[in-house]
Amino acid sequence: MSEIEDPRAIRVMVVDDHPMWRNAVERDLRQAGLTVVGVASTGREALARFPAARPDVLLLDLQIPSPDGIEVTAEVVRQDPSIRILVLSASGESADVLAAVKAGATGYLVKSASREDLLEAVRRVADGIPVFTPGLAGLVLGEFEGPSHGGASAPPEARLTARETEILRMVATGMAYRQIAERLVLSHRTVQNHVQSILGKLRMHNRVELTRYAIERGIGDA
Amino acid sequence: MSASLPTARAIEDQLFAALGIVRVVLLLNAVGWNIHRRDNFQHPEAAVACVAVMVLWTFVANVSYGRPRLRTAQLVVVDLALAVVLMLVTPWVKGEGYRATVPGFWVAGALLAAALRFGWRGGFMAGVVLAVADIVPREELRQSDVGNAFLLILAGTIVGYLCASLQTMAAEREAAQREATAAAERARLARAVHDGVLQVLALVQRRGRELGGDLGELGALAGEQEDRLRRLIRAQDSLSVDADTFDLATALTGLEELPGVTVSTPGHPVEMGAATALEVVAAVRACLDNVRLHVGEDAPAWVLLQDRQDRVEVSVRDDGPGIAPGRLEIAAAEGRLGVSGSIRGRIRDLGGTAEVATGTFGTEWRFAVPRERPDTAYGRRHE
Image (cartoon, rainbow over all chains, first blue to last red; front, side, top):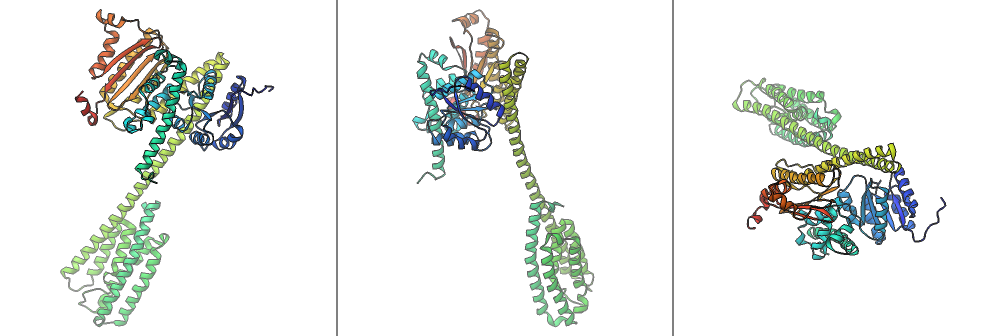
């Protein structure tokens, strides 16, 4: 390969235990002008190589040999809060994907997504723009509206505003940010900001839940 | 034998350990009585020998029964035989007209051992043998002797029965635990296998799409199978346990069978009365039929289910050109109830509301349906 690395190119690290998949994704990323700064096939390898690789984006399969994608997400975000993580999963939206997003992932894509969708998602995530599938948006809505969270008991800063709920609902019915902006007569940028804020609240929501749990169990008194 | 299972074996060990203590107490009791009645013996040296045998055998029995390997039928038979012999020699040692046998209650050790080892049958048989051995040598039979014999048989049978059921229960619990562990492990393995299959299907689909031609077709097939498998896994994840209620989330997810349809749910079961849930699904189906009719056979459509606790909300959206303003009203006025009839009517019958929005974003139906659940129903009556 005789590529000249563009210093401004997005630095990506690919973590997946299927060599064929990893190679295909690596090739796609390089051809599109992105820099692959590292690969790993297990959670352990990923955590060992991450500090030296210094990627902008971690392309992470959730189902990898231990520690799994969720644990890797949490640990990597702890080490470098500015890291952007795009989670890939073969099994579709599930509790795993939601857990990874709560742990700090910025986006999620089904593995069967096309090459173009993947590249688009990597670029967005690198810019800090959340990449949701409709299915994931439905799960996140469920998280804020669900029976275990009786919205009112959460502190206001961890609750979604009416506008945010509306936007999330639109994402969950398959609308692109551009379409949402047009329908709500907002700028594209504003819609993205709302979605980022939803993601932030989801994580705070998670922390609120954990704190409440701790207090209920009498661990939080100290 | 049920004692082959570890927990049943552990219970037997524990019971025999307890019996060891009981035997020592019974021995002390027997020795004490024999010392107390030392003047009653016709052959005192034989009485001393009998007591010596009891002391020795109590020691041997406790050591032997303490080892599961030695707990054989032979040991139980020897145990019983010794008790029987000691009872049978009593008339000679004590002379006729005795009341208590030389071993006295000490024979209960052999009785309980037989019951612990061989269940109620063992206990019953040992009880009969000991009762006969107690009664036969006596010249005159008093009521208390018969009562004692009866108690021996009864006690042996009951203790044997209890011990066996304790072991059976432990064995059943262990089997159930093992079954649950195995089921969890099977589920975990299935998940790993499914995931592997999904990975490969996704890869084939992706490469096929890039290469086109025959391989593209292969890729499309892989994509279809991937979709189906994923749907199956999701349906399995949210299997409802309660038969009276119906999980609307699973029912709506089933609509992903239709080409182009994506369904988003809250990730937990949304339980509702079956009749209501089926009506909601039928209304959503009517919306999707409309999409097929007006937008296209494979046109993408999205279904979103929201669980708002006192009600459920369902949105159905397509990316089509939208409905021309006033068209629905004109159709209704002309008596053609098609869309508004089957959709609005169904939802209104459930006490809910149906709204439709249309524009450059396509067409979006939105239903809100109150939840028929007794525990949350009170809030709605006042609305």
